[in-house]
Image 1 (spheres, rainbow, N blue to C red):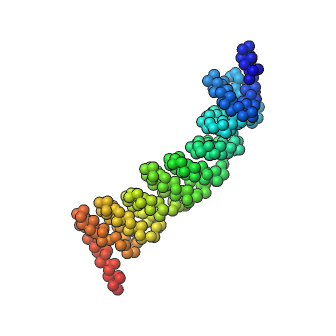
Image 2 (cartoon, rainbow, N blue to C red):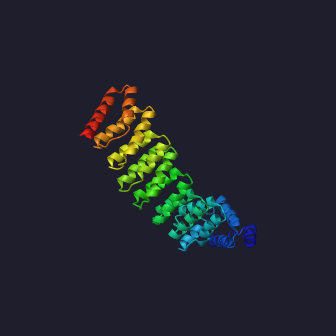
Image 3 (tube, one colour):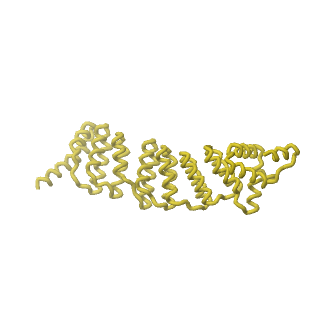
Length: 309
């Protein structure tokens, strides 16, 4: 550092490799704060971004060598407890057309996760994919787990969509947890979109678990939509779930919604007996939906006739 200061006094510009060597040495000595200050100073002066003059990153690229000083600083700032500068430097490397190797990306992701910064880990794996690297399936799952745990529902959804589109093997528990997290965060449109996307690509979720969560929170309209979706996909054979949702809709003064679910069941040939039909009939009558009430009455009479025979 003293040599650098003397060079500045004499207005002798250090060559580009010198910056890299100094940054690397500071990181090796655990002087992450001083390394960060140097990079900040270089950024302020435009040294790392300019097209001429002393450009450490550009010089390293031209020599086709790995920028170990930059990697050391990137990982060092994270280990020192400052995730933002590490990610910012990754962005800088990409701007200068240097593509970090998969090992560097993996190391960054692990550091972010250890620092309980799943959002940075998610942003890093996004850039890793854009760099044409192929992260391990376990890396996707680990980041997704951390995002869900920290309540980052929107980022978890985006990552899950990426996984589905890239045919990354799904973990049914994580997919289910992501959908529940979206409903918890009131991002229901994205939740419904993801459910459709998952099933359209041959995967599935634990639908009963999601619907039970919605029922527990008295969100019967959304539960009804998922049940109708399940009928279309020939899922969900548990009659108690249907009865719970229909009864919940009736008590919430949504008799028309309750009837639409019941009607969809009959249209799909689901002929099993439900213990909620009396409540449904009464709710329809109270809502002056006489035609719908008559339809339910006929179905009830038919069920009694079948039982009698």
